[in-house]
Image (cartoon, rainbow, N blue to C red; front, side):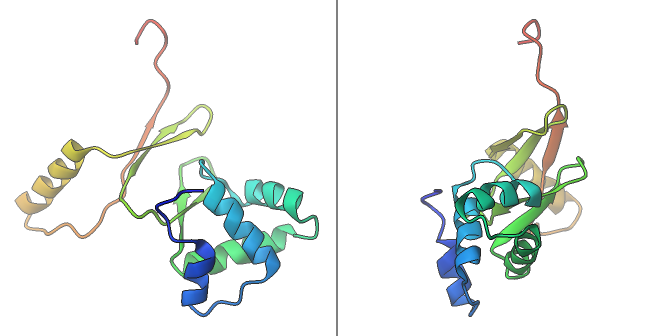
Length: 142
């Protein structure tokens, strides 16, 4: 589990959401995910914990969590919506277009450049989302 994050279950309770056992399972799976699973992957993982969980329950729960602002949806150009808990600290994503692997990173240089560009155009930056798409370097290119 990502230690820096407040428990999804606590966040749900703070928003007055009723937490069924199936929602708790899905929340735990999301919290323990080091990747950015789609609904089908969340269903696969959740159903190993509770065989009674249906894919429609996962879809409804993910939508509920997203609408409550406790998870984020990402569309990494692979035709699947993928999810992660809302991070405590900002990060960007580097996506391998061949296999869909997502690398999270933070670059102070990129953050400073974005702030400078916004100021140059007369804006105060209030948020952004950066997704870089690439393919792994070959051994010769490394």
